[in-house]
Image (cartoon, rainbow, N blue to C red; front, side, top):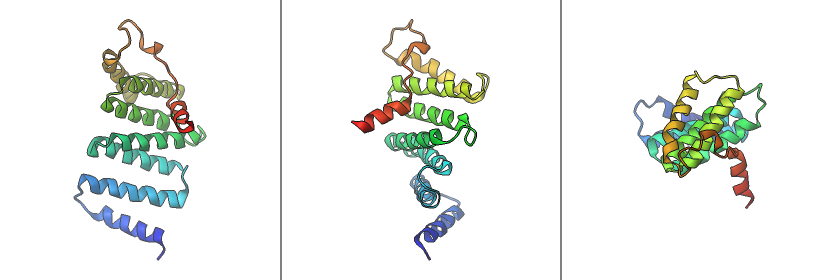
Length: 175
């Protein structure tokens, strides 16, 4: 039996368990991530979906915000590599919202605001209006975060720098 087949068998056994602890769930998704990377390659959308799921587990259940941010950032990069017809704007926009929520939990409100703005802009580019629940959620989050920034109160939200997060990430890796 090849290593990949053993990993798949192990993942199937994990799925049959009904009660899991928080670390067990993360371990299951880490195994799934490894299996998907081996089977599909680093830049496959299914890998991004698994990264986002693992990021949510790290954010909400384990409270490991650095790992959550890393997972969501990798997922964002993969989704942005896909053709728009193959993968819709919503995947990018939802991932940006997840990144914004991690920044908010870390207390980096400026980055959270930029990520929420980029998320809303991406939803709108995809034809999803402000009446959509996820767009409304991002807009409410923006309104809640605004008073926590160091910017003058009268400065409108749209005046905040909208430098894409992907450009920020690539700038860090080049240094």
